[in-house]
Image (cartoon, rainbow, N blue to C red; front, side, top):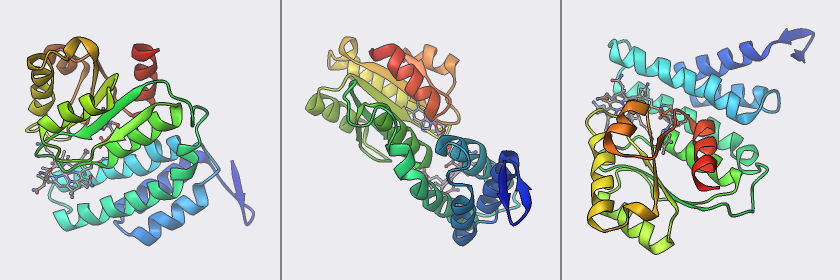
Length: 222
Ligand code: B12
């Protein structure tokens, strides 16, 4: 419960304000809402239940033709600015500075969505993993090259579109072709990915969000 000028703001209301600010597509509104909410609930909750919830609503409105691509781009930009403000808290997790394992993380070729993937990278890093975030729209061979270069223990593959999901499967095939599959764990994520999909393509796990990604990475690597 937050007291401001005599009015009580519940955490639920803060989440709603964050979500509404993203839906407004206005960066200033998001920055103001994050400024108000910061410190009132863990950063990860402000992102998951507030900013990301708003982004999902933007997706629904886009799908229904109520918002257009420029709006989605503005909302994404506003959301990134909000996440940026929470970055210091995310990055100062209890594991910061330790080295639980090496993880290469990226969004597969053909897919420019990287907001969620970036949050996953930050959370894994905060939990104590050495994370090499290789960006978005990453040529599949680059995952293999980076895994070799960093001697990674795990690779995270993000895909936000049904059309790019296939890239996750192809990276696993490339790992097999290169004789590397036994030495690395594969974690898949992104809105269209599921547990069943992970099993089908022979990934080691699927995680629905950044907090779950940390739990699963620890289960598989420690
Ligand atoms: C923002 C957005 C954009 C932004 C992206 C900006 C950026 N820098 O990322 C912009 C405007 C650029 C964009 C472009 C496009 N988009 Co878009 N976009 C979205 C939107 C609205 C939100 C995505 C988002 O950021 N969510 C918030 C974050 C926090 O959530 P998240 O990404 O899901 O991540 C969480 C989990 O999934 C998970 N996770 C994510 N990655 C990983 C990785 C690992 C390893 C793990 C374990 C977990 C994990 O953890 C994250 C944190 O909790 C979605 C709708 C939606 N509901 O997903 C559509 C959506 C994904 N886009 C869509 C489309 C169609 C497009 C375009 C083709 C539009 C166009 N006509 O040009 C282009 C794609 C261009 C390309 N080649 O990639 C469709 C995809 C449909 C499909 N086929 O599946 C969607 C679903 C919208 C819709 N309903 O139609 N988009």
